[in-house]
Length: 130
Image (cartoon, rainbow, N blue to C red; front, top):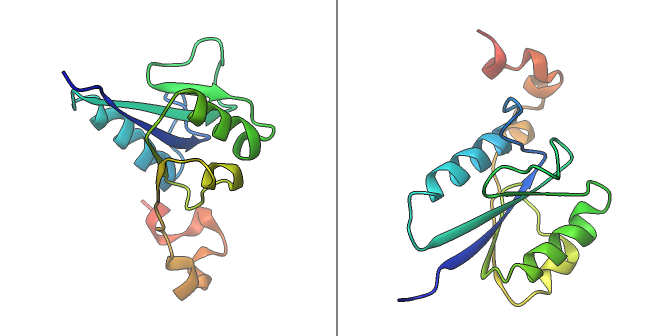
């Protein structure tokens, strides 16, 4: 039997016990949820600060917020022997770039470049109106 494929996900401030407040959190939540259905896939989401580090939900590891991207995320990814890293937030931390694993970064939500007037106040953005 082949060993499972280990994937690390930068979950940022996502935590399942809190309401989803951004598009990135929605992407992370759906990826973590749907990846459970793939038998040979082991996905670990690394999050900070929005829940109890002593009782993290399955598939999510809560790391300290202070120096999250700079130190704790790269160390956790290396320690857990992940083969892939998914950066849903559009960036790959400096030390993580130097690790010998495959990295995928997602660039999305670029509407504010073309339509900056629509994003001056996020509460009044067209997508947030009922």
